[in-house]
Image (cartoon, rainbow, N blue to C red; front, side, top):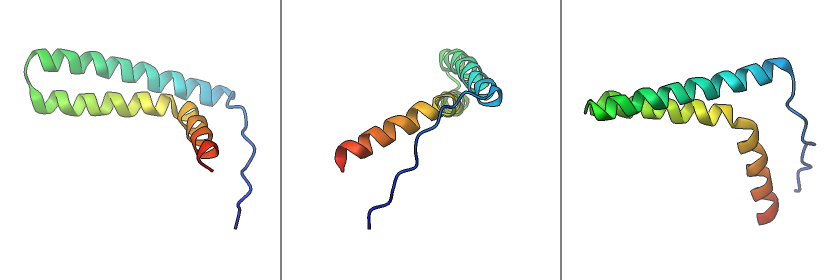
Length: 77
């Protein structure tokens, strides 16, 4: 059974732009804090902060990741 793919929409509402910007900004801040923690050799805190930074940056790029996922899916099918 072939499932019809929903059309892609533009993600341009003010709320989406604000949340994307906020996720990216917090992710960059967490990455800077993680860098400081790595230099202080507090490994567990640095690891957790790095994980948080990656998660926030991925959340900020969620629409691009979604589009990339569909492009890869289209190439493989």
